[in-house]
Structure formats: structure tokens, C-alpha cells
Length: 160
Image (cartoon, rainbow, N blue to C red; front, side, top):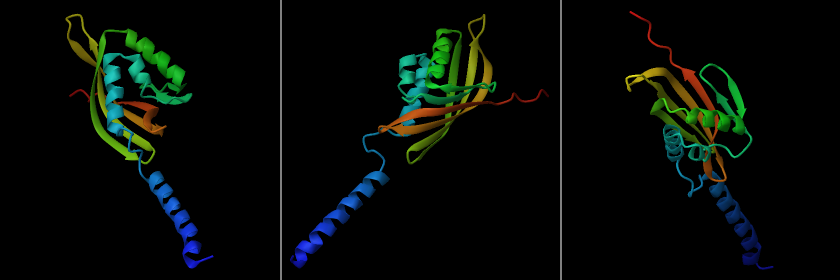
């Protein structure tokens, strides 16, 4: 075997390994940034659009949701049912402020501050709850999907 032939196979194998490593290290170029998925998720809540909301959550069975009162739901179906019931109510609105979004490889974290407001008899809205959402997303088939949602109530300021 000539010297050129002996080096061709190892060089080709090395190039394939480098290409594979680069593909693993690079995020899926076709995937939308996490912020886009987060925005769709929050807009679906504001619009009470269950189908749009479920399009942003894991396709898997396990989805952790920790409610402001500490109750823990652990399945996608429980998450869906809770939101279906909640979206049927028309006397509330949510105001969101995205505080932080971090992509960490195939996981992403968002911190979102929100005000949940209840409609009053006069047609105005009063704040019912102020809280922080810790949302964890994971890549599934190149798409960001919610896998963990924790609500932490922000206590009201003490009376003066």
C-alpha cells in the first residue's frame, strides 16, 4: 500500500470525527432560540390558547409544575387539565416581565416575574398574586420544550 493510501483512511476518519464533534457542539441551526419559545409560551397563557401552550411543553409524560401554594403536579396530562380549567375562567389576566433567559447546551432556564390580576365589579383589575416563574426547557428533536415550571410567590410588602 502506498504512503498516500495509508494516510487517506485515517485522515478521512479523523475528518469525520471532527465533523461529528462540531455537530454535537453546535446547537441545531434550525432550532429557534429559547427566547422565541418562551415568548410563545407566555403569549399562549395570556391568550388562553391551550393548543398553543401545549405546543411549547414536553412531548414526554413527565412535566413538573409547582403551583404557588406548593402543590406539585408531575405529568403532562395534569398540566394540560389544570390549564384547560384555568383558561375557561375569563376574569383574570397575567402581566409578564422576562428577567433572564439562559441557554446551557440542551437545557435552558428562564426567570419570569408576573402579576396575576383579577377583574373587579367595576371592570378594573386588582393584583391577586405576584410571583416568579422558574421555567426549565430542554431540547426535544431540535425544539425547546418546557419540562419544569415552578411558581414562587413574592410576598406583599409589609404595611407601614
